[in-house]
Image 1 (cartoon, rainbow, N blue to C red):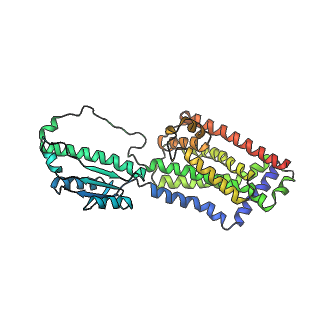
Image 2: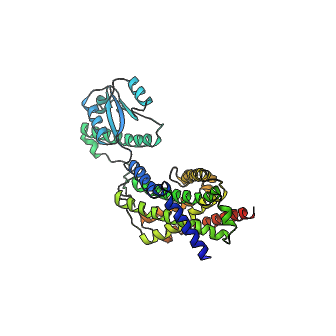
Length: 375
């Protein structure tokens, strides 16, 4: 048994070494992909191009525009009409726009007048940028209004807000989006590489006409699965370790948990994700079919993993479906170890779910291979 598996493993490594296109792509492609994706998403949403129509032309309006620029969320530039704002937002030149009406300063100074008003327009087609602009814009207007009220009437300092908020952030004190985004990106890139490499294993044998030759040998379905898994495990696990080093040392994502525990769980998770690839490889007729099916499965996995949309906000039936994908549970475990320094007692349910799903996936894969042998 071990001799047959060993020969199959050696054959897989020889085939990879002879492929001058696939080998460099598998080794260096994920690192380059993570570098580009993480670099582009780790900076947060700031310096949004913002059109400003100042109809007041007062010291107060100029101070408000300066506060807008100092927030670093907005990058304001002046326009001379509402039509220009409409045109800039329509063609994407501006992602936000402010309209400061005439009499803005007078309304701030004169307490008998209605409160000063400004209008913020955001491009809702870009939801993330629109949400950030709306949240920062609301806080900016409130803070500037209070500051001007205090300058006009020092007695306002005696006024106390009805609610006092004491905010403390755990595990991500600087509220860096990169600490959430980059580990998630690493998680599904590693899963995608493992699944896609494994998905081509058996499909390649079928496409080259050598699968039938393997099936008539004494090798069993379980031995074939193990032999095809070793190469994908080695590549996927090596890529995971290289990407983890890049995330921690290059992007400064904290590593608060146990590194040996993370490495053991990551190896266990890689074995589970390989099952998806082997199952796809067992039903695909060609390598191209295997890659297309794997790509479709990976896209669904990303949606239901909680990376693109929080699982908690999905309808109840969709939340049940999300539990069928190991990636969803893995991201919880990965972020818990990386950011919270948590141990198994915190995420043992997720580990149990990954193990249960892995057993089901491999049972299905072996059953499909046995049907191929019978056929």
